[in-house]
Image (spheres, helix red, strand yellow):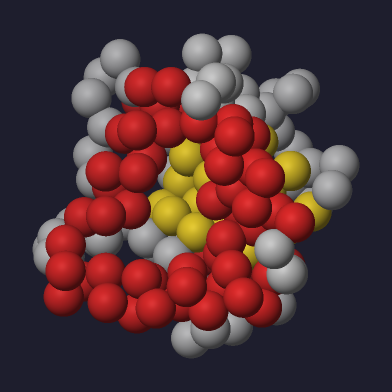
Amino acid sequence: MMDLPKHKQLILFDGVCNLCDSSVKYVIKHDKNNRFLFAALQSEIGKKIIKAYKIDTEKTDSILLYIPEIGISYKSTAALKVALKLGFPRNLMGVFLIVPAFIRNAVYDYIAKNRYTWYGKKDNCMIPTPELKAKFLD
């Protein structure tokens, strides 16, 4: 579908959400193996992946994880798969993958639904600093 550099995974996030912005910065800080690339859902790449995978952005609108060999992970599964790659102790969050997705996603959806109210919203997508620019796709 989309070529990424070898061993890279793409995190698609809501570019105007303050919680998502903070989460991206957290992942960048703890991504010691430089595994992740990032793109806003609102970006050209984000739109291409949404279209290719026929994603309903009314139902999934905050985080997607694209792994070229595997495809797309959504919501809590995406967040927990990212946590698995961030080293100890963050990788311990992966234990929650044993909880059925419908339960995890109920909690996830509640947070996602309220994220703008609780954390606010920006007018524009985050603009990465020059040193982080290489981690972001347009």
